[in-house]
Image 1 (cartoon, rainbow, N blue to C red):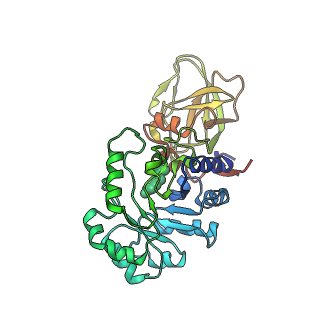
Image 2: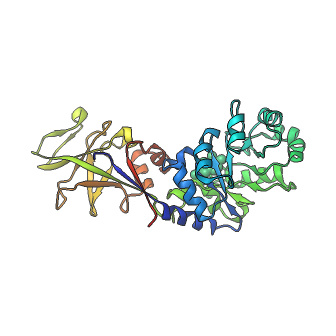
Length: 345
Ligand SMILES: *Cc1c(COP(=O)(O)O)cnc(C)c1O
């Protein structure tokens, strides 16, 4: 088999949920959008429900299908993008709770699904998603009469604890929502770490569950082992890969490994990543191609059958740094060709 092995540690996922839950005295939901941050929404959601999560968030109504099927009828599944045109049947059939983002969405929801639960998303300065002050002021009374499940907003800079945007958005959220009896939510992973003032009634962690920064105490959840297809000896001065972008400066042993940019190993990692064999770092040399990478295994004490690119020696954030991106993008780029194994320990 020449596909990589992606191992998803569901026990670590559950431990991360418990650890984030223990940081607050309020309810902890779980964000499982983008196919559970690339790790498989159905399996991830089920494991988090078993850990105790009762509320889940997805980005789009379509994403709710796999989650609802995995969880059954009980848990609340909310949709960040709200109630878009064409969503009505999906929201009704799957019993999803849209977070309404505009007066247009409010009207659409009240016209088509007047008895279906909904929440409201407010924009407190990020200028991305949610009702602005004017919209909210004009419709709040009508919305509150209908009894939303949740009033939420999202922080733009929560991964920078000292950023002045954090207290600013907190203040705006208070001004927009103080006095209402509906449960409120402001914090994702970063917001949980900002402290109690940011917790309100419900937190919405995503990345921290999956082992990513800014939750530095997270247990790693994804491990990726890539099979070596072929190994060859090179003389000093030989070149490797597309564009001849790497040349040996000593006699070298080069392993050809079965994963490439089509599997989420971003091409920007060319010449910049490290793979591991039993604690021995092995540099990726030459360019990342679609299905293959080449790795210098000269210093290994044996020919590796597999090389590890996500594991105990290298986290998603380590790899992200080398690729000039963030752990979120590494995880959600993990390709569809890997064989996936869900470990429960
Ligand atoms: C993605 C997202 C989250 C989860 O954020 P993390 O940083 O992954 O914890 C929470 N709320 C909203 C609105 C989001 O878009």
